[in-house]
Image 1 (cartoon, helix red, strand yellow):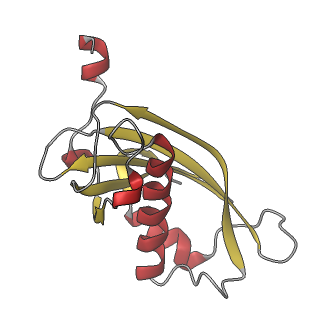
Image 2: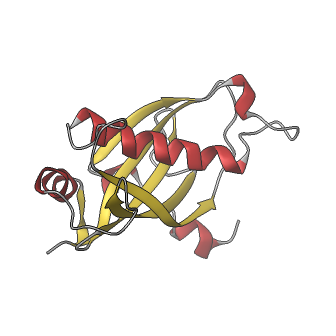
Image 3: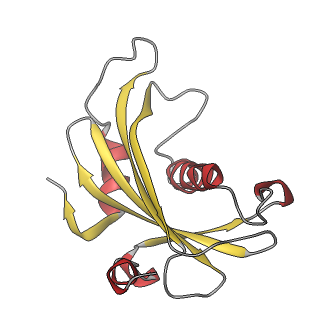
Length: 153
């Protein structure tokens, strides 16, 4: 791992919310570590769990839902079952109908991220799938999750 790549790793302190998660036996691939696709499930679980917990999302009935339109992840260290992990979550950009989440996955009590990623939700009407302005409750919850460098109007 190069020094430049190492410098990109963030710490827990950069994320206003930490969500405890668990790895599962089936998360490991034939190479003995958590497969890359599982990290995206960690991202979804952490973000949507926070939104549900805050009362900003009812998965079955909310008239406005978030659709992922962009995603990415960088990997710094391998994880494997039965690692204890936490997902750090922050909002980096909040628009009229979209939000960019940044998520980091941390092993146990380690300070530096094992992986860091992002995804962009565009919020749409559940029935028409057309973009709509963020509901007030959702906007308030997202503003509360904003990181220090976030672009939040």
